[in-house]
Image 1 (spheres, chains in turn orange, red):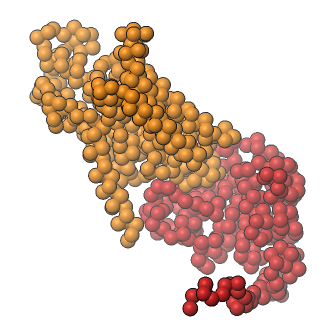
Image 2 (cartoon, rainbow over the protein chains, first blue to last red; image 1 turned 45 degrees about the horizontal axis):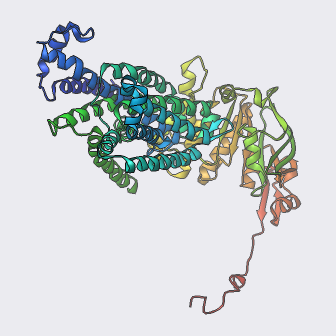
Image 3 (spheres, helix red, strand yellow; image 1 turned 45 degrees about the vertical axis):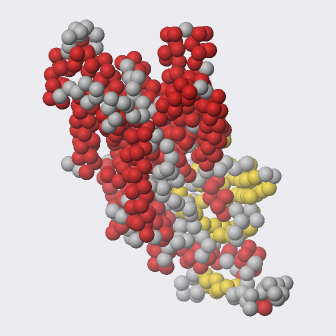
Length: 348
Length: 275
């Protein structure tokens, strides 16, 4: 077995173990050894026919399972999109937030939270429940489309312009979000802040099923562009001479990562650092070939988010920490260490 | 066969190339020379289809260059750029392998042969596992050359476009590189190569196209093109030119430039001059 298959095997096993432990942890502890039995025995897992006495089964099927699965989906989407966006920007510091996805989503989410009372009256309670998610998704998409339109010349996006347009849209959206926060009352401010730090707290089966296609399609499709992204690393012009169509790759990566990250942000808020850091660690482990980095980033992203969510629930129990705080707390030191190590390596 | 038919290229109303016409036969190796800004790189960009000519057209193998798909073209044309920066820590071997990504060879052996042979003649076999980011400029250039050669290694009538391929290489590999492309031309490849080292152009190519201010100034064998008068017109430099009676290789010796340092900064007077 070569190094890459070993890494795949370790990541997959790690992910399964993390999922099992994560299912067991929380306000109600369920022993890990019991979980497979409960899941197998609980026929009502998907039909909703569990009895009231089956407390562990109920907690597992209505609270833990959707939450853990949501974490897996969001982590996979953030990881693989981060790797792909770093590929087209030819910059290891890029992440999907760079093209305005997170900032656009935050702005629209803050808008909804800030005008909650007005909106809820006018469109009714039921829609209001999903309004935040819809608005965030729309905001993410809108920001990405704006950045994309600005950076297009002769039908293909120019990467340097895209970076600058992204910075401008980020600043604009950030300023407007700041304005809304300034005008918001105490409770709204708290909601906005909590949303911007990310959380998997409100997970439900509806959310899991809702974002499932938006995550599945990019996770399956992006690895097909592995060779093209490899050629991108030697330069866009060089890639074209070697027989690829750089415009097509850029379009695909931007569309797929906007879809998946936009969908994730809409249900979990902004979870920083996963998209930036996960591809870095994957490259350190098994080399820089995108045909490996893309799928492995999805796996490691899912693993990191599952573990972070578990920590978020356990560390300050019964309180819940925002998951964005955990990923940044874990991520920033690792990132600094990588920078330090790289600096030492190039100095030699 | 490659035909360039009255190609002009205009940017902001200014012609970078004006009415260029020439054709290249199978097995011909052609050097493009000229002063900085004469239009050499622009011509290469038009030949490799990175830029479209504003007037005229380029015909390759009986088909307009625009009519090819990127993949079709990659199988019969390979381009070496003078600037190559790799953004990730790929190994030298992975980079060369990228040349075969769009290979349509039915037999997988064609890929492995292209890989090992090009790495060997470019002298990078021993660097195969090294990260590109740790290689010197000249070594990186040799890796990219191997990649560019590997891309069309199994197509013996392919077109090789090389923009200053030897600029960062040491003396041995400058000659090795031109020796390789010269030999490939002998097999049937068409080679177009931008060179600054005029004596290497004379030594390794069949034909030289001299550009001046975006126009084709002269086109012919090295002996015809490299005359004291032509070189002075194109470069503004005095040279003496001799053709070796035994090897028939033309050799250009610049007379050198002497400047008077006393005239530098002559407008600077004390106290602005440092003591």
